[in-house]
Image (cartoon, rainbow, N blue to C red; front, side, top):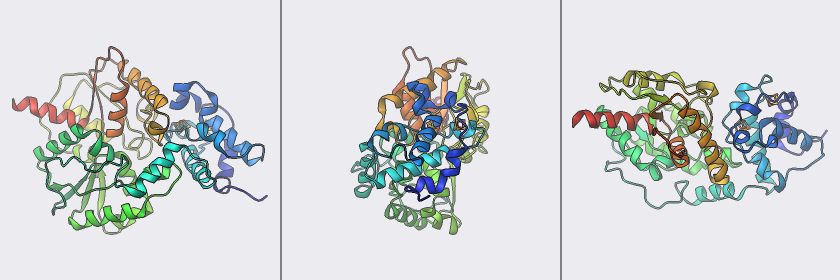
Length: 368
Ligand code: SF4
Ligand code: SF4
């Protein structure tokens, strides 16, 4: 039978593997915030089966369902049939873009990244009072959220790197554009090329990314293969910190939020916990942690396209953090910090930080 769409060519067998068991429902953040079964992985797989059977066609009426997915991979991790839901959703979005059906916010992201160097279409980034593009052992790559929305957290991360005597440089970085792959488009090769040139010119052998999504993009996408071919290693901040002697401690009760892009997508669970245990002996887990961590609701373009539900997802995560009585919620992702901070619970008793910002604050207190 002739197939109409690439998602069917690539994932027909995967979609048919879905047994409708519903295990994915309990873990889907979109279902959790909307309670609509059509929006969990099972609902999405059923719809796609109907498309493959010719009963319905892809089109605008499916945008709300198929574009409302943070690509958090909770469903995949909990699926007995191991259906690759996030990969299927990303391909379906590409097919929908090809036929002219796309959420306007996703379309907007692509248009912005064809004309601007960051996802917010801002003219000038914060300069962070540091020289850029110099020779150094490391490049610190901030990412768009850290550069334009969470600059306080970024300044703290840079102060911490200075205190730890890390020989790094910033570059005139531009968006890695990895997010375009999630929202139905392709990475902008011109942006990737510019980042590769700027990184290579510093002579650095390692890039430290503050953003888990940039970390995934640099390490996995073919547009950034040249970095790997040149032997330039890309690590995330939590991997740098884990072996460092930090010399500070907090007596506060601390918990940790696993960003989906570090945890489920890259298997990085223990490094951040090793660092946190060193600085905060009263470390507690939330009810949902490691592979079962709840998504903050920001990923897969959902924050821009479905802001109300994105905040509702973040609120569920904050309720999870409240459970063990934490005074501090740590993570190491500016996107998670941004969404969780915007969601703020009524009478919230804890503060949300990146690990780097929290350590830097402890060092500030020690030096007073
Ligand atoms: S857990 Fe997997 S097999 Fe079960 S309904 Fe969800 S996607 Fe289908
Ligand atoms: S990837 Fe996450 S948001 Fe998307 S369907 Fe699966 S569990 Fe739901």
